[in-house]
Length: 395
Ligand SMILES: [Zn+2]
Image 1 (cartoon, rainbow, N blue to C red):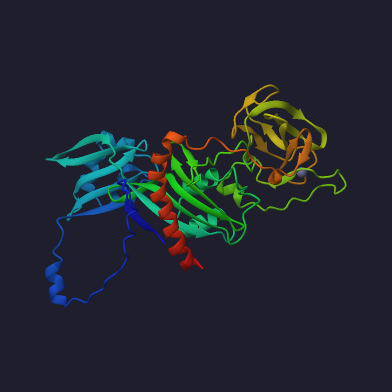
Image 2 (cartoon, rainbow, N blue to C red):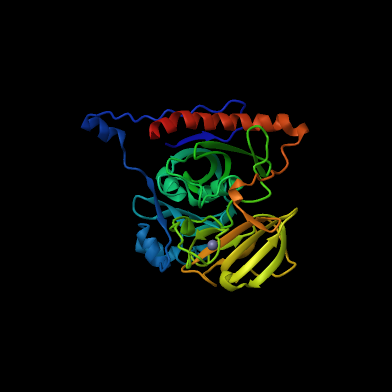
């Protein structure tokens, strides 16, 4: 279920456009009259690794005679693998214009001009729209995002936004659901990439969390900050690691009373500091292998073990901010496979990190509350709309 509305800020959320397809049979003679041969047509191709310029121009449907001349235009040297090229061609296969993006946001335009071509480069004029999607978790967040047509960058933002409340490695359950409102940037009628998530809802194990973007931070619709002093999971969320099996078998059941939480993840997955702190230990520690201990404010500390290597700069006394790299998943020490052994300690005692109430960041400042509400309410209304319509459809 996808719907688009314009970005213009308005006090009321724009209604969803009603999608309908009308198919009408036309008598053959009338159809011939109604569809004259076009003077030009558009063709799109992606420049691929291994493509030669002449081969690529031929694939675009450009006649050889024209292709030879076009290939000499210097601006075309900027074509890189992955670039989507839009070509406007005459009915005879003569190129009228070629357009493609370089460096994310500059548009190169090569236009026929008499016997030659004229090249120009300008900032791409993206059109920003809002996309609204929702999904239900069956196996993983990425699988659900794929099923809903949500790009990876949006799924990752979703996991980041709720990272203070939900451990996306261990807490997700079949039947969890989400709705998300995000920007899409399009150029020449084609969506080039997704932008920021403006609002999101995640229902995890029956508990609903909501977020709206205000300034550079995410808040609940009531204005409470979603940022927590500690992230729920010490692993960076990615497509590769999220699909990894969850079960870890300890090498020796009797090794010791297991006080930590084990995260199975591919070797090399980035391990991040769950909160701001100072490195208290970074070195080898017997069965724990390569291990880092980070001391946080108060009496909290966190332990990351079996690392393959430390992140650069991680040594005793180094300061780390929340989400900074600690090291990378490995299987040093006593480990049967690559995994992270993670401990959350209070006054030196390992505790279940999920049972600890995480202090929150600052709420929206009082003087800004009205401005915040003006922005948050239409977004929350869109989430309501998604919750009421698409979830019913997905059921
Ligand atoms: Zn462990």
